[in-house]
Length: 378
Image (spheres, helix red, strand yellow):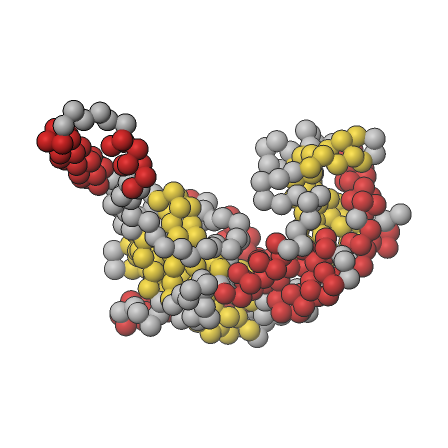
């Protein structure tokens, strides 16, 4: 299964509304007042008939509404047998990861993930220095259940204890799109002892009596030697200095480091998200927004911007749409023009990032990237 995720956003925890809400009194009043009743007796008769019709419609609506449910159990609420089995599977898959044993991981995966295993193999290769010789501590797992006969378009799992204002230090939220019915577990491991500290997340699905690998995610706990709290404080400092573009990008880096996976949020990430909204610029692409960008005498569709840690550097990545990237020399020249245009438009980026990466994205989704160090951008 390729995990269907959503971009990180603050999840508001409101009262769940039933499938059928009672009609408001004003609406009923308007309906009653619009009828002409010749007599009190006839009026009562019509009122009784109307009540029967309303009850019948409500019952038919309830019967025709498919009952779907998604539930989450924290480690404390899980059956001990489930918790033990999930933790054992997570440790087994971690051992395979430390040995870069992609064959064994694939053999123990659900069919849809095994059919497209390139992402897992790439993660193993990229993070082998962080995994080899490392040890892992398994955080308390979560058990997610989806009922029904078809995939749920948006499965939202509220895990733990929530307060009047939403999440608490004892809660988490998972949001997954198009999740098939089944019993899942999320196991998060803190990996240390390798080159860099790492967060490794397994999504498991119970198939028969066994827990199979359904999702695999790696995320470094630090970028350029700093953790989420450091980036959050830097973002607040940028905001105080009026550099909202830098602040917004640093908040995004803080959220990325604090979130083991994009489809999970906590009280801390919700707080960072709320803070980031106060500085989100109106002239940079965000979710579902894009801008025209003039560069080198041409206009390009600028689709994304985000921070990216590379080694000991923090760069900023700019993505734009390109009709054709087959001519790499031409595409490189376009990338350079894009980089110069972005830095000219937002000179504050020079104080926050080591370089800029421009990625030209073709209609097929392939891209071609180029990096310029800030000191080389004239």
